[in-house]
Length: 374
Ligand SMILES: Cc1cc2nc3c(=O)[nH]c(=O)nc-3n(C[C@H](O)[C@H](O)[C@H](O)COP(=O)(O)O)c2cc1C
Image (tube, rainbow, N blue to C red):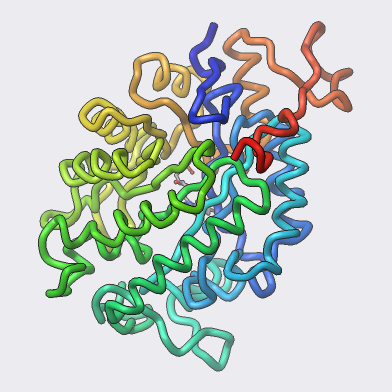
């Protein structure tokens, strides 16, 4: 049996394989609302056989969007269009993951295909962009205002409120986005956090907001559903956040109810030298898994089935998350199964195209995420 196709149980969620669709911003919403694009985009990846399909970074507050077109979950209005997507993913046998985010000093920017950097108010941007400290990401980005302590508590509350809505929408897995130079990562990294109160300075202080947030989210996120934390395992810059701190953070949040560390890297400052190559971040997942004793996800230039299987087989990570390869090939999990000689269940509608003897896809059992079990 290829290890990539072994089940993975996290709390009450039993993933049928180790393949997840990594969160990917689509910059295609109006007022944060999911729409048909998201149903088709995420739904296609579920048809393709990924065990877990993540939404894009979904803002917990309007000012926490990267661009005006980001997805949001700051109000109850956002729930139903997302619930529709969750129902479709479940019908395809995939679990649904929600990534909650706040863009911090990288907010109020243009979506990538419309340029880069600051989006002025006259073009739909917003006046107040917030961060731990009043230091912009770069000259072309908004100049943020430092959050007051009371506002930090409001951010924590906003994550918890959005987590509650994600549960109501039926999501099975929740991920807190604390990577890629967005708000929570900005608190973690000494390169962006120059505060001298209890949220800045020492490791304990810089990581405080993440601990508070995990605790607040865990209180409202159903106990039987898994919670992931995505981090930038290193800033790739001397004097920045590094893998040693990531290991220590993983130990701390594990005790607070995080089930899996999703190990990405970079994004806090422009121009970091990143040794890009196949699986270039996998070593972080391996080290955090070993030293912090927590499940990890590996992400970053994982493109080949044998590569992904090797990562799971050799215990470097418990899950692989694929982003761009899933855009190129939404049916990657089905192809991986074929290449690795595994039977893989197909949607009944597609069985005539499947290898002979392929089993039909089973929907996620109703009840796995019902309130009686949550
Ligand atoms: C179009 C696109 C949008 C992305 N949006 C997000 C996002 O919303 N949240 C996030 O954590 N990472 C985001 N990422 C990063 C991916 O999840 C992933 O970590 C990165 O692309 C490396 O994986 P890959 O080599 O498989 O593409 C995005 C990447 C792409 C290509």
